[in-house]
Image (cartoon, rainbow, N blue to C red; front, top):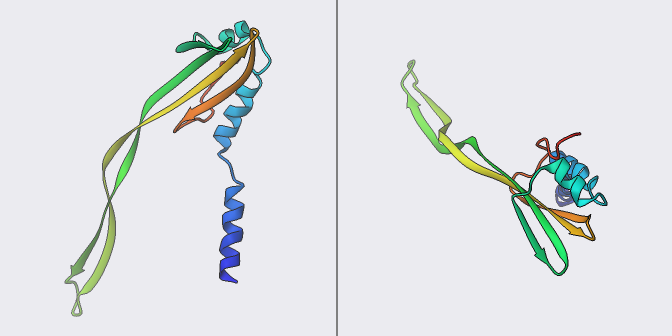
Length: 133
């Protein structure tokens, strides 16, 4: 019974996507079928352009540093308060941790129209991409 409950919870969690990524995919998906000119108008000048097999690939990249905290080690201590003393446990956090976040959206262009796109990176979420006209 316990295994069945755990399985159902895992199945429910597997169906949960990242809403920020889903929103980004939806907004970028609206560009599929538009002209390459419209893509550049909406997204700006790409960071890279590669041509291969009669197709063009336009890559847009964003990266930034984010701050988090490195988990510290568990700490335990003995207290000497009162006639019986005491025991306490705590958990601390280490210092700040800088994490590089990035996302690259690559658009495939065939016959001057956006045919598809892919996302790559550790922080592909809706971050005001593409610019609204």
